[in-house]
Image: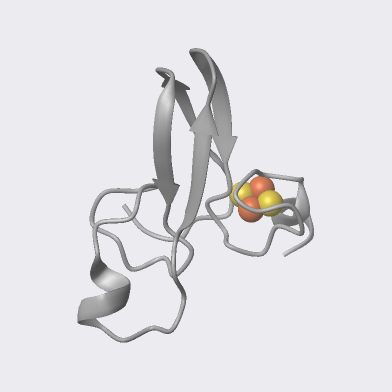
Length: 76
Ligand code: FES
């Protein structure tokens, strides 16, 4: 798992999620604290899902609408 040129499509339960912004996590697409360990300077984005839903998390980290895929990966 790593930065990739396609989204991570996940069926999520309601609740808080932390999307990894730095791309160094070992648990894509979620923050595992690697940004602190590696001092990336890129902190995660917190999302509160009101209900269970399918989410397309950006895997390339180039989206203009973080933490969601906006199709930017198709132009990389
Ligand atoms: S994976 Fe689609 S914009 Fe990043």
